[in-house]
Image 1 (cartoon, rainbow, N blue to C red):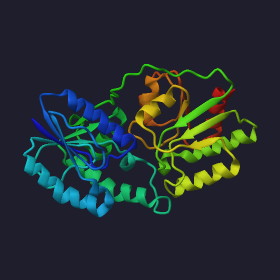
Image 2 (image 1 turned 60 degrees about the vertical axis):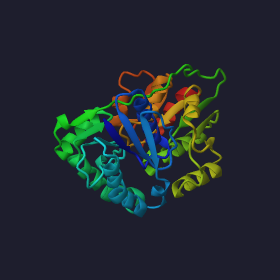
Image 3 (image 1 turned 60 degrees about the horizontal axis):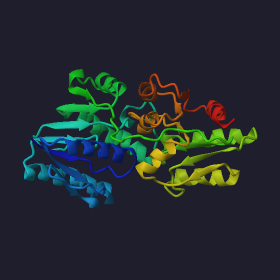
Image 4 (image 1 turned 90 degrees about the vertical axis):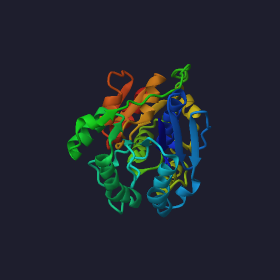
Length: 329
């Protein structure tokens, strides 16, 4: 079977991790032929995996729309594929080929509604792109999600038959040989690998650190995978960190191997309140890493039975600070 896989949004972070995990599965499937349609990622072609790259898709929303409505359908026709797998939350329009849709964005299903003032990007995503995602879910022949809670949300809120929704639990194809080992000295490192989106909730970490500062607690550091000029929000956070002299480092985007190394020597903080699954939680479990996490549906499901998890309400900086102290002293 010839399968065309679309994932032009994937560039970094969780989306890129999802693409890489699927790619490694494709390499092992010698019975099918895969044609990957991407933007920036450079994946190696093999005997059963062909890669088509369209970097210009990233130039603007207009370029992405042009690609979706004109280029993508042409590719499906040109390569005479038997099946489409869309990893980008929306189906390919104007084609008759059977489509499986992988949905890994929880924004359309979040009770939190963003205003234009809070975030123009997220408002557009929830109110415009979100409607495309919902339409795609209804039109797809099969919908793939990563968690039970997402399946229940889609089935209940959109009245989609449960049998149409398949759960594909995240499978991280990495061998872990080194596990978390707390440093012997009276010092703790906390780690949060996430982009600078507002719902990633970095602000609550800043507030918790300010509380620790008032209490005279300083023998720790927090490492964030943010660039100080990533967006207006990260610029604001960076200014607070510098002004208040908080023990927080901005180290930018890391390679996956570097992220895995941090799990062996730091406590994961994960305050995000909108996720489908939260891949760092699974990766932390693999490394037996302690986790301080926002108490949400996704985190409760992923961390069920995990004894190294502490929960807090995503807006409660006091509880977060208290949990951090348990590892600092």
